[in-house]
Length: 114
Length: 113
Image (cartoon, rainbow over all chains, first blue to last red; front, side):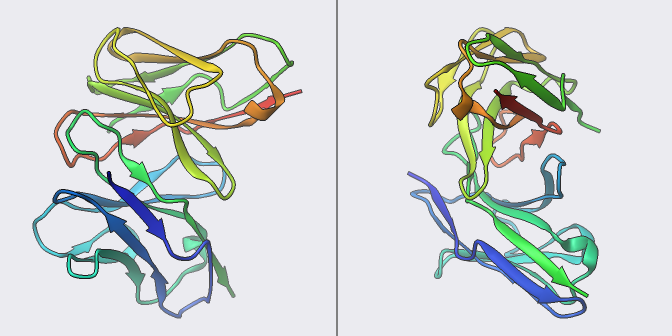
């Protein structure tokens, strides 16, 4: 069965410093992986996705993630945090087929300090 | 743009009431999902549907049922609301292509008093 572990429940960074949100996955097949962001009182928005093409994936708002099969990781990074990045971030792995649900991590809350 | 619309942003219901949460998507997606979101627990799948009149239990189906009479609409029903069902409820839809992302509604914050 597939699963996702987000290694930090809360990350706090200063504005202008790098962001690293860590995610490890477990899957019995070649997965698709996603990062979603949720701002307060909003729905979830897709940041980026990996679907077995390039291992370094670029997303919106300057975020990117690297798929590392050997480490079963899909960490999310951004070179320089902005106040507007403060939100909840979810790492997600695809289901076995197109008719099975995505599997979500428990989320990482990112705080950005001025 | 894909649009997933949930009928209410905020709801307050009394214990024991029957509650209906409605979700409509406009992109002809086959799959639809209901999740509940609680602090520290992430998103937990309640039910999903991959076709009209089809439904599958997710991880936490107890106390809930669903209805999908039309492709675009997926309803979540709380048969007898209880205070432990106070939560944020998120609806999502996706096509059947493997590896495709799901699209989410804005969520319904339900409070059961």
